[in-house]
Image (cartoon, rainbow, N blue to C red; front, side):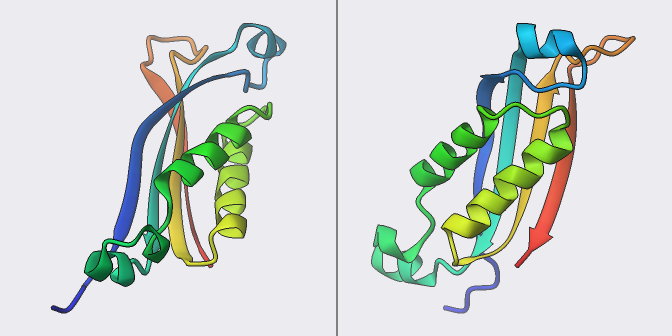
Length: 122
C-alpha cells in the first residue's frame, strides 16, 4: 500500500466565547465554530491501530478550547493562536488549516456566520 495523503479533521467544534472588535461583544458573547484540518504522518496508526502513531483528537480539541477562552478582538488573531498552539504541541504536524467562524455576526445584513481561514506550514 502506498499512502498518498493523510489528513486529520475536526469539523464544527462549537464554543461560546467573547471575541469581537466592539465592546458589547465582550459582554454578550456569541457562538463560534472551529474547523481544523491537519496534515501529519499517521502511517504508524494506519498500520498498527496505535494512538501514539497519530495526533490525539481529544488533545487537539482541548487546545482549541483553551485558545477560544482567551478573548481577542479579531478572528484572525484567534486562528493564529490556535495554529501556533497546535504546532507547539504536536511536532508531527506538517501543515494545518484552521477556520474560525462567528455565528450571527453583528453586521448590517442577515448573515449566518463570518469567518477567517488560516493555512500554515511548518
